[in-house]
Length: 98
Image (cartoon, one colour):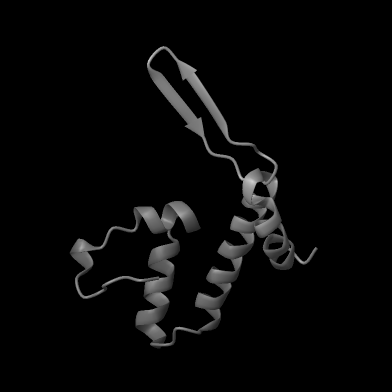
């Protein structure tokens, strides 16, 4: 996490929690404040769980192709992951122990 924790009133955890689960930011912040240890078991567990979940999400969508559609003057682009499969798949397999 790259955050400035000097002022609780200005911290917005929505983006971190969106990617890591509801309450994840506060859990990590509380642990860091309590232990002053960036490698505490709770922080490591949170990181590993979120990395694993992200790997599952990518693995599930690894064959999705990018789609470009045009309707009148509107162009819609839905980005897929298949273009990056050769690069991503070995990394995902490593995280998922495949």
